[in-house]
Image (cartoon, rainbow, N blue to C red; front, side, top):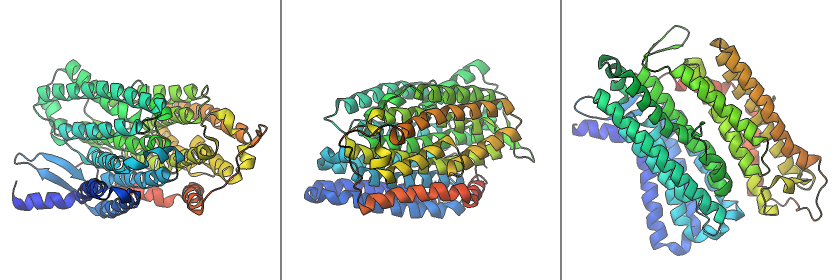
Length: 500
């Protein structure tokens, strides 16, 4: 690799370099100015804003970074990656705001340096998960994200629930990581390559053993499925989401899931799709039937997530199963194997960010007052906390997928993609699952607005900052439910450069 190519590669990974620089600076500031560690959230926020600026620049860039002498690229920079990196950056910005406004994190103030260093480490890992075009780099990126998130899940050291969540996360993560690495080794043994762009041709040319290849791909999917909480790799999700600090739970439910889906989409699109017709439907290598496999996984994921949520009495645990169900909806879009399905996924993710982060923000603000996440303690809060009650109602209606909220648009585009592909049965199953989800979301509203308020119900005392943060999520959820063209156009433009 010449110096010119190396410098060009550095130019293409400016967001990752910015994250790395601020990660190091946070460590140094915490080390040498520990008495001023209350400034670290602002510094992390600034670092994310600068990173976001570099990410936005990449919407018009298409290139390969760190190309070796045999033309193998390690990193792909395109508008598809920029879209998901933007999701990660925005989620990270809200993560900082959620942490600052959570009383649950008060006891960790003396460890702010470690906390925001781990966050930046996760951002760096997720960026490479989104842009990586080599299985080894992708595996290392997944490990970087996982190791950081294990620690963050157990960051509230005085909480037994948090420690338990971290341990369970580590055990399940180690298992899925080992399976993924074994799958990668089998693929390398069959094709002598780990580069996504080479695998497409090599898998066919090498006449690889179909059974071994299918087994290897299932193992690789185990590692990716664990990140997106797809059944049957979801077991860690309810316990970790319930036990981890709520800001961390919100972060994992959106940013980590987005990076996992970006990885899965690029893996399938680049390694197995060789053409598409005039309607945008993909033609894939017949070595593995991705469509049938994804249909089965998506149905199992959305069904288990929704039905398990029906019985939950803890709001965070209920939202955890809800997050599993939403992963199932997103997988239906990928199962279509078309540009329309991919656009639906991107639209859904942009909206899912707003409504899911918003729901967890309300849970944090209510816990600040009640000290509990149990559903029974939400009785009558719609009257004692009207602003939070109405805001929570909007987010839950959007998560259900009802108009006039943005969640309806996300579901609408998924159903349009399914109907366009004549996958009517899958569309009906997804629709019925949405009806089931309405029940457990309504349960929360029933407790808030129809149950008798408890004695000494806490009053709604919010700072201006907290009100503005809530409004910054409520307003887009309503606005994009009525005027959604900008998100749709951005999604359409973002998939144009995926693959070469």
